[in-house]
Length: 154
Image (cartoon, rainbow, N blue to C red):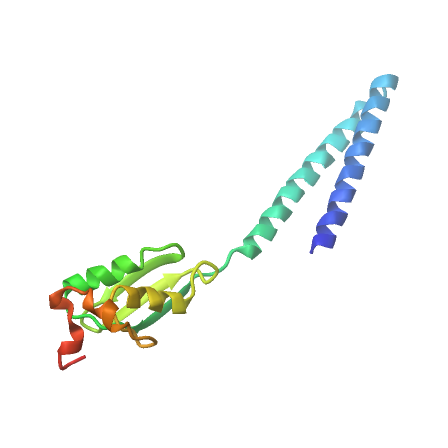
């Protein structure tokens, strides 16, 4: 890809050089200005082509966000709030916790954060996920109403 860009830029520089050479020639000889107008039009076409080419290259580099859904233990509105706040980090685009289903839906950019890091963030605030379990120390930091391990349905 770099080879194509380099070749394109060389051609572009050559055309600019030719334009200015002909421009000076026209001014010196008072020749037909029609030729110069065509060259100016060609320069604009090349310029816009370059901008379009660079925009197309940039569009290919944009990554698509990933959306995952997984189980997170939580029992109350405070749990929901804490879980969603834990997802307020760089790379996470959207997070929504469904308290009734105990499901967290997260949309994130894989180049900024991984799914394993998301699970670790949830463990750090005291919540177990389907892939990882928080430590007893992390669990102890949760509010007394959020002690999901003591309930029989978790």
